[in-house]
Image 1 (cartoon, rainbow, N blue to C red):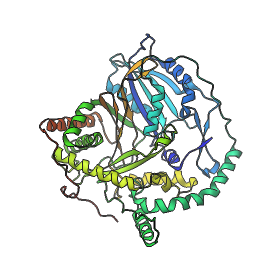
Image 2 (cartoon, rainbow, N blue to C red):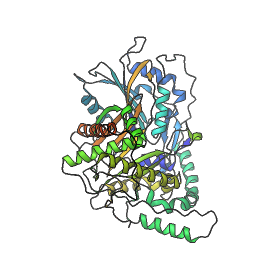
Image 3 (cartoon, one colour):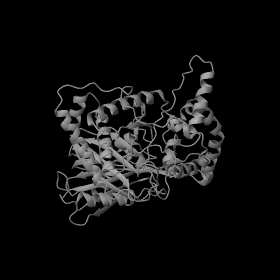
Image 4 (cartoon, rainbow, N blue to C red):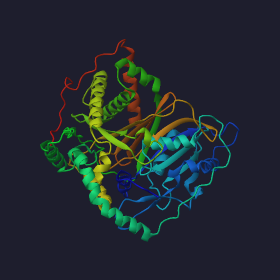
Length: 508
């Protein structure tokens, strides 16, 4: 048995009748393997069965502690039913990308069954180009972006040759009784004060850097007071924590309570063009991705008369997984909060401001404890974590309250060479993430070969057509590509201290 961390548990606690806690990957494949076998559910079931010994997250079943006295546990499932988890369906003719996106939106709008291992795979036929889509859906409590990519690397091969030898047997654990879990819960309950004491010195001074709670009333006061106390305590190794960021999110249509339903749009953009922009303007690929998203949101909101005067604010997840933690699955993640200068009309200056803002955000992130998100949860008893998550979710959608961010933007590096599923070549690998109360849009990007695959997810009640957002993102890339072609040398990147001033709300 393996106990979930407080951060893993938070992804369970955040779920309600409107918010889902899973992440997905949509792969587009040839309809047949090199040997001529159709890519169908039977093939995928065989492949997963052969590699199940390498896929612990596909075997884990959730064991709750009675009365939520402690965090839940993963148990290696002894009643695994692969036919339940791998399903097959087909799109009606003509099988367009929009039809596929609508089907994906319906699938991701349904929560995973917690009585079973928390994953599903859908093999979707009927695409208009004759190819087959495979949607892999996994709970965020078991994987983050990096460990989710590790799962996909186990399922996919670097060549069309897929091994067919039988897998070694997997020894399943007996599912624990309620009495056994109660005993574990009582032990965990006794250790709760120690968790709080260990987490306090590192977490309290940085509470206003925890993106999900920094906007709540009283959090900044607690963090400021903790910093003042820490400064007053003489200690040779006492590093003075920096004050929290004062970035706030202006109100847009996305800062609202979400419904249970989603809309999805996806598409490829040229990684070569993005790298050319990067080289021209002396920034990173991630800076260009954030600039494309910023440009797209600016133009999309402006066309609808909804562009705020203040810059938007974005959550940018980042991995804090060490080399020693590779292959351990679970969550090793933090979140940067960065300004998105949608108030800047010039695309080159906008990119320069993003480059400077991202650099500052990274420097600040390096000064924070890697376990901050996990430590902050230790101040909430496990029995109250779900209720606290629901209360925070309700507050995140309330008008008149500062919001944590306007949009979540994530860029996950992927393989640069072609991959195969059971011998069928993959042509695209699209990330499909989720939305939250108060943040009704998510833009996730994954590189694959020479492309960047964009997945846009929005709440269904907030946006009628997410494909217009994808079109605005494409226009943002085209705009930067045109400007890059007119430059022969990288310009000086503007420093934040000399960038045009923008209106920010002062820290409370």
